Length: 192
Image 1 (cartoon, rainbow, N blue to C red):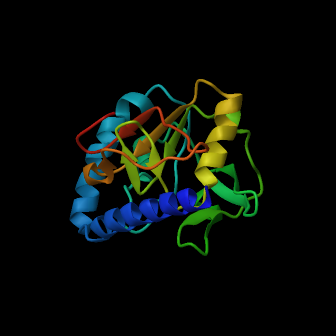
Image 2: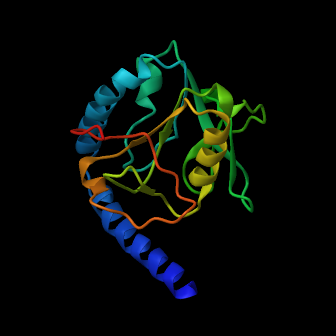
């Protein structure tokens, strides 16, 4: 059992490193162009939503924060790690004046005004790798799986949408019982 779990982790790490290498090699122009196409593909979901959770993109991640300029009438929320031991995240309303740099290199809110996740219509989910069954491999912390499980238990209607570049979608990723399956994956050329 222990060996099985270790093998699964090693397999995930190998896929993660492979895809991160490709993502890190993207030019700024490629990131911008592909991000714009992904955002266009997200439009049909965004237009009917009011409260949207995004993440603060960093390095060569999809520039999802562009959504805020495109949809100023929507309410955007960002995650904040509140309990590392229990892999817990809560949400703050996005406010540019409250952003602080987290030790992992992304921005989060300095505010301790948290909102109830039940208000969310959409959660935009980052990952390193997705598959055609809408599974994901993140950075390995388990924060999103814990958060998505909590949100899904309270709100069956919320949409979990993974965003990525085409090359981040593989045939199959190794999964564990606690891994959450998303509703949709959106890339520059696909909606799964």
